[in-house]
Image (cartoon, rainbow, N blue to C red; front, side, top):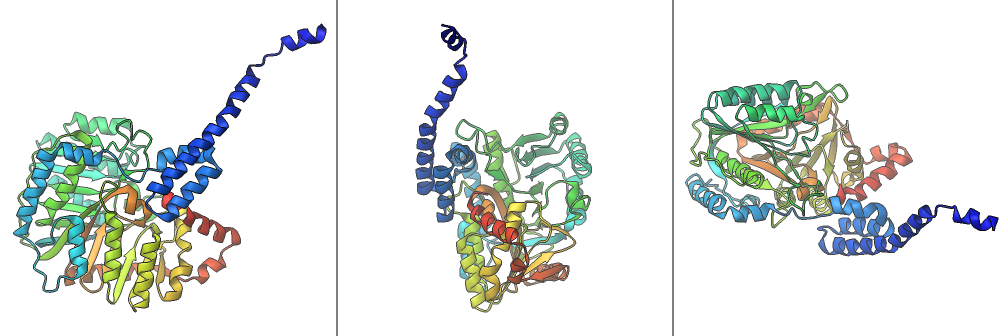
Length: 489
């Protein structure tokens, strides 16, 4: 009897809870199997499908929540928003396409690469543009802030990251000053990239009359956990007449004030001419998705008096029918006849781009890759080393920039084609981020980009496939393992 009383006094709640957990195990594996099926059917790359399927089957307890957050291949809602605004957005796009025909570039030899880029952009190259190449933070933000100060009617601002630091507060001060002078200001920021931005920063701007909104990639019940999509564009545009596009976000690190990494090396361009309206169209599509409205803007393109450069704006993103950014890089590499130089802070290309680089090297093209020596994201830094074996033996040359962190996204093709934008050479820019790349055709501008590259190469150390062999076994293993994770980074 004493033993029975003792048993009766035991709390069996924990045991029941444990049995409930055990009952969930088969369900978790079923969900993991279903998600693995979806990954195989829907993931855009075989490498990504394998990575997801194996992890979902072997470790569903970890992989299923990750898949819910990171596994979607298409960004839902953006196209629906565009369709809902057909009377506004499509009317603007169609009218702009007609306007731009007046300025359409008349190339003597329009190769396949040019026509491919135009089809991807759904807009023509336009002539009559003036472009200033801006190197590093001081030149970039001196130009941007001066442009803001000179705005008369409206300013469009879009950044992936905005910090509430010295540079961020200076931008806020200038915008508030123009808003108080009656200039309309529309400001989009990525809520994930700006997760550290304090509410007071946004509140101060809104109180001054600035229309400031997050891009809201997580808006809606189907997108609530989809933090993997980002709006990575960096655009400032004034009065429909001048625009700035490039790699720099708003933060003191771009002014050389990062105590850990030091100087951040970046490139931006200031553009005047008919290409400005095409940049404006990319902004207004994002604005419509974020707010449901379209402000009144200047949609009449005008030829710049200061230049005759041929320019194309190429927006890209996960709502596109095709993988626009990746296809552009493929087309540019394939079109190169004697030179292609690429600078990217995150060099994690997919297999098709690796193959295009290999073929370019086999054709005798001078292929050079400029990347950082100091990482800010360890996985993509490690992944980059895994490509040395595939490319160095064929003659592709790799350079690691030494003075600080290389953040520019630039490319030089042959003698007269260059690109400066926001897209990196990695899976995220190819498939997950909203990006914009500006393509420039012109001998004089390309000479400026060439001089910039040569200066950067001189400040770099060239490495080859022996560099990976010099590293520890753990480093080599982590480099290869990081590459396997590239499709879901």
